[in-house]
Image (cartoon, rainbow, N blue to C red):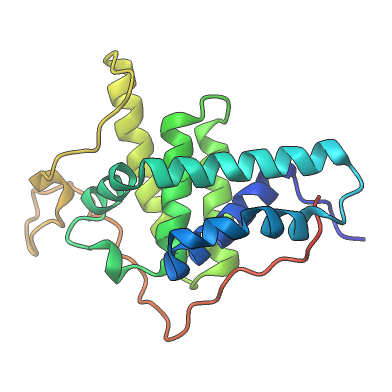
Length: 199
């Protein structure tokens, strides 16, 4: 017997799937939201569970769309010298969702957000995606925490600084860690598919 998927885990997976579809089809895909969420939650006999999954999924999707430029800036400035279009579709949407949660969802611990993003990356993207996602989000966590400790209510993306660039080869004095390198996109990106049921 399979272990039921937690509601917010399920919501994140559905958000990823729908954001992937939005990237491919554009804004008109939002017209299919109601049918999409109904299809993927209809087997859950728990009405409250269905509603919670639908609500949190929509919160993530709307939040990512509303703050898309800001989230993209966070990703590109941390993954120095790597533009979004060079990243796998799934990886960049996982990062958008997770960074949105780190910045805007106050009741979810950072550790939960990051661990779930890593798990989703391992499940639906490339073999190297978990490490890449972990590196980006851990750096984002440190920057957000640092700014909040300084009293900044809404942390801003980091500036493009030398500290975000890879250390120069042979520079023995440098203690900097090179920014995460995105895994090479596969010829065909697998769209995350889940059974139309809710846990």
